[in-house]
Every structure is written in structure tokens, then in C-alpha cells.
Length: 163
Image 1 (cartoon, rainbow, N blue to C red):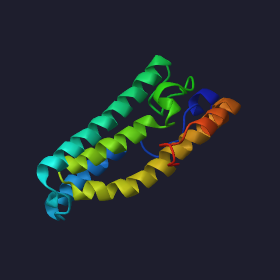
Image 2: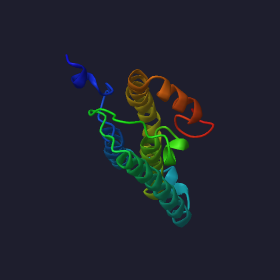
Image 3: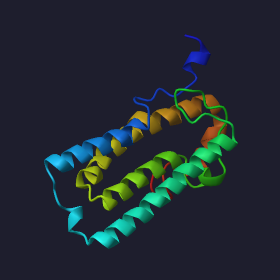
Image 4: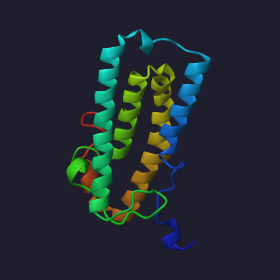
């Protein structure tokens, strides 16, 4: 196989499918077996908090996408990474789109009182970490070497003080 065909991380699933799958599954489970945990929280404060959390997640995700576009590199992991984005939102997290996506899901869980979404985010986080993020990191280290190692030492994987 040529190097051009291997120039991408070997992720286990296309990343946007993870939040989409757990959202659909959680809605089905909530309908079939409602737990009524988040629904016990007063609706207005729960919805406002959820909207703020979701908005923050959207902001982080959009900033990540814009930074990658500004650097003229690919967002899609089936395509090669052309350059490391290390400025802007990428100074605070090496994975803003994943952090933002999970934050959006937490907000949706609150807004719609989707107990199963909150629960399914735990195994989804493991799949995201081991099946996508770890593989992307290995790829970036192979491709960019010391430049990536230096960046990795400065920016947290997910959030400051978390990974």
C-alpha cells in the first residue's frame, strides 16, 4: 500500500457517528424504559442550564472547525492531516471538536431530560478515546514527530486538568 493511502489515522468509526448513534439510541431507550431522573429537576432551570451547556459545546466545536479551516487542513480523519493546528482553541485542548461534541450532548441530555444520553456518554467516551483520539495521536506523532510531541506537552488532550 502506498504512503499516500496510509496517510490518515486508522480510527474505528467516523467520529460524528458516535454522538449521532448514542443520541438516537438514548431517545429510543428513554421512550421504551424511561428512568425519570433528569425529569425530576425543575424544567426551566434544567432547560436553561442545558441550553448554556449546549451553546458552550457548539462554540468550542465551531472554533475547532474554524481553526482547522484557517490552517487549510482536513477535518475528516479519512483524509491526511496537512498541518498541526496549535493556536486558538487548540492551545486549550488538542481535541476541541470532541470536547465540544460531548458538551453539546450533555446539554441536550439536560434540555430534553434524556437520562440514557447522559449514561451512554460514558461508554461513548471510551470508544472516542480508545478508538479515535488515541489512534489520531499515534498518527500525528508518526507524521509530525517532535513538533507533535512538543505541542502535546503544552496542550491538554481534553481539558486543562483532565487528560
